[in-house]
Image (cartoon, rainbow, N blue to C red; front, side):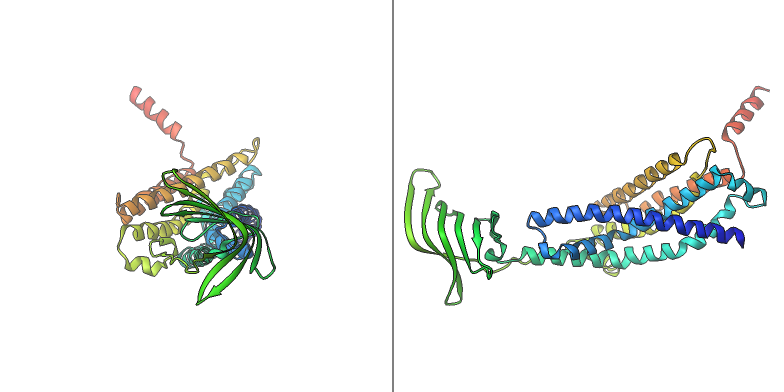
Amino acid sequence: MLFHSSIRRELARSFGATLLVLFTIVVTIMLIRTLSLASAGSVDPQEVVLVLGYTVLGRLNVILTMALFISVVSVLSRMHSDSEMVIWMGSGRGLLGMAGPIFRFAWPVLAAMAVLVMLAWPWANQQAAELRDRFAQRGDLERVQPGQFQSDSQGKRVFFIDKDTVDGTQGRNVFISAVEPRGESTTSARAATIQTTDGIQYLRLLNGQRLETANDLASLRVSEFDEYLVSIDTQVLATDRSGSMRTRSTWQLVQEPSAPAMGELTWRVGLVLSALNLLLVALAIASGNPRAGRSGNTAFALFAFLTYYNLLNLGETWVSRGDIQPLAWLMLLHGTVAVLALAWLYKRHENISLRALWRSRLQGGAA
């Protein structure tokens, strides 16, 4: 039908443009955050693009939901403001008749969003966490970058190397600050090389001095050396991600009845339900005034989406702490939104005026 095809075609154009804008904004924000993590030593600089890809893939479900919601609101608001909706209603199409073509257009997006939140979200989080953990599980020498102060895996020593060679086996202007049982020590040397003896890796310092301070600050010892060996910890710390619910698959969450698992599962299911409810909200709130612009509806749509999304996160916290049952929270939040959206949509479809009803009730009471 002409009615269905025209609406779906305009929805496709609006959804594509909105998705492109939102995707660009999210990629920019995630890139800045990933670069800050790389500069802080939490992410390998050579894997910034890979970490960024996994992070954006995990957020793609929210981007699709927001783009679909904003596109529906903007298209319906334009139709109202351009009096195009009046023509369709005059031909026998009510506001509820818009639900058919809108949901027919939206169901592939909703299906893709459900797959992303149920499958891609935990997988992307797991891959990104593995990259960060692998970079964090480096040996002491692998942590050191020229021109940067870097602590060891146990946090007891701080290394600094001014310059190093291409193969990374030699360095110049070396500084080591360590916390020892007897006190603190500060060691500096003009050069250093890596030496392996009996399977143990050492840092061989050349032409330097060592300053030792007791814990009670009662003694201070300064010594100079031509050669000094410092043992290096090559073992990496095992990282336990078993407590991270975002990296677990949906099936694992279903099999584990703990409160944190139910909180994460409630958030994933709630995101799918919220996408359906937001389409009903978009139908209900979309309106237009020929004398006013469409910025008001767009601003209200953004506010409604942010409020709904924050309630999802709040519900995840409450369910994870055991303050409310998962099913009760799903019914309370999403059931309430669905009932309010349907009531609002029915009011606009039947052109019911609450002010007129209240006025007639007052006049009937006075009579």
